[in-house]
Image (tube, rainbow, N blue to C red; front, side):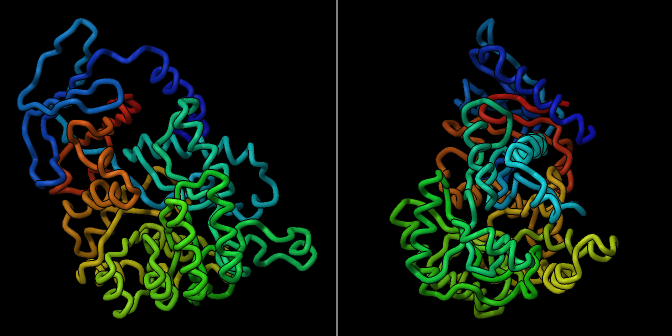
Length: 432
C-alpha cells in the first residue's frame, strides 16, 4: 500500500467497521494463543467476543451458537493481545522537510496526516498508544477515534509537552530574534515552580490524559546539547504534585543522567528514552520502580539516517544523533539487567509510522527474552497507562484487542512486524 492510498483505505475500513451492527457474538478460533501472564502458548482456543469485550476463552474450537454469530478462522495463526506503544507522536513523521513544515502546515493539514498515521499504527497491531506531545491535534484525534468518527488506535494524549525556555519542546529554538519575539510566550513553556504548575493546569484544561515534560535537551531540536539538565528538581516536583492533584501521570523525556535523576527523585511516572543513564540513575530507577520507556528504534533510526543520508538533518542535530542514538541500546541492556521496569515505547514519528514492532528486535538483541519484550508491550504498558483492568491480556472482561501473526513470536520475534489480523474493541481492521 502506498501512503497516498491511506485516506481512501481508511474510509473503506471505517465504513466496514461502523456500518453493520455488531454480530451477536464473534468466535475467534485460535491455533495458538499466547497467555502473556503464564508465558504459555495454548493450542486450539476460542475467544468469544461480544460487542467490544472478550466474554470468554474456551478450550477447543467452539461452534457458533446463534444465527447472527460469526466465526473468524485463525487456526493457522498465533494470537496475542493488542500491542501498546507508550511513546508515539501521531501528528508528524520524519522527513527532509520536517523543519520547514513547521511554518507551512495548518492544523487541518496536520490533522489529515495524523489520521493516516493513526490507521497505519492500528493496522500494524498497535491497538493502544500514548501520544507524548504535539500541538493539540493529538487530543482532537483521540476524541475523534473515541467517538467513532475516524479509525485509529485508542489514544492517551499528552496534548502539548511542557518545556523550559530554550528546552527540547521550545519550538522557537533556532529562530531569529524577530520570529522569537513574534511567537510571544507559548503556553507549553514554563520556568520556575509557579509557571510549571500553571502549565500543567493548562494542559489539564485542554483535555490531556497525561503530562509530558522534558527534563533534558533533545536530539531533534536545534539546541546545541541534548544531554544537559533543563529543569531543577523543585520545578519537576511542582509539575508532579500538580499533575497528581489532577489525577494525571507524568512522562519525562530525558537523555542525560542528571536530568533523569532529578526527575526520578521528583516522582515522575516514566523516564522516556533514558539514553545516557549512569549506574546511579539505574539504581535509583530500580529502587523507585519508575517506568523506563526505551525507544530504541528512535535512536537507531536517527543515527542510521545521519550516516546514510548526509544533509538529512541540520549539522547540530546530526552530531547529537550520532552521540546519543548510538548509546541507547547499550543503556537499555544495563538497565534491564539491573531490574528497571520496562514498558514498550518507540517514539514513532521520529521514524516512519507502522514500523513500531521493530523495537522488539532491538530489545531482544540487548538481552531481553522475547516473552518479556511482549509483556513490555502488553501487561507492563497497560499498567503504565493505568488500564490493567481493560488492556494488556486476552482475558474475559477486557477489551477485544486482538492480534494474530504467522509463526511463533517466542521463537522469532520478527513475526510481530507482519501482523495478519488486527481487532480493536471487537472491530476487525486487518484480516489476511
